[in-house]
Every structure is written in C-alpha cells, then in structure tokens.
Image (cartoon, rainbow, N blue to C red; front, side, top):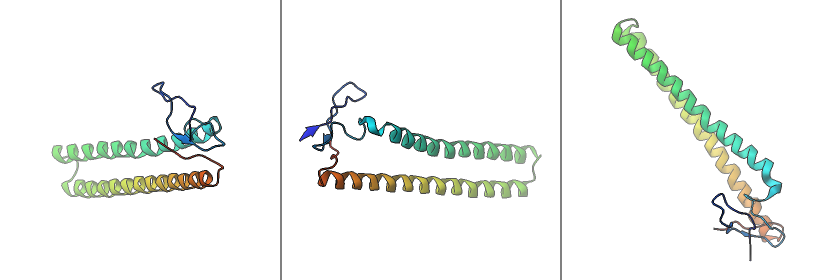
Length: 128
C-alpha cells in the first residue's frame, strides 16, 4: 500500500495510507486546501463565539454581585438577573453542543465517503 507523500508540520513524512490513484492524504492533498481552510474557519468561529459570550456573562455577573454588595442593585433584582444569566449560560452551552455535534456528524459523513471511495478504488484510506 502506498503512503502519503506529504510532509507533516514537524518535517517528518506523513504515514497515512492512500489509495492507488492518490499521492496524498486529505490533510496534504493540494486539491483540498480551500475545503480545509473553510473547515478550520468554521471551527474557529464556533469555538471563539461561546467563550466570548461566557466572558460577557461573567462580566455581567460581576457587575450584579458588586451592585448587590454595595447596595446599588436590589437583592431581588440581582437574584433575578443572576438566574437569567444562568439560563443564558445553559443556552450558550446547548448551542455549543449542537454545533459540535453537527461538526462531528459532518466529519463522520466525510470519513464514510472517503472509505467508500477507497473501497471502490477511487480514493484513499486514512492511516496512522
């Protein structure tokens, strides 16, 4: 079986096995550059957004706590605000899980397509 002709980031040869008609694995195939960039961009956007939202929620919580402690925010209003912010955190986490699941499903579907292509001689098989 043929190995990918690509070079990894640490300057060692890629060890993935490729199909008869391929010289490169998915990660090193020049034909996949744009698709890899798009996937990386989506992953980056998905991972940054929830953390930014959580940072914003934490900032609001600090403000509420400080306001309750210094008396500028009524304890009842502070409690309701904290509860609402807790709901927001759960919504952010749920959204993150949904995006993560969608990415996993898309990756599994891609791997299944690659496996099918390799089985029919039209692609490659991922390897170590």
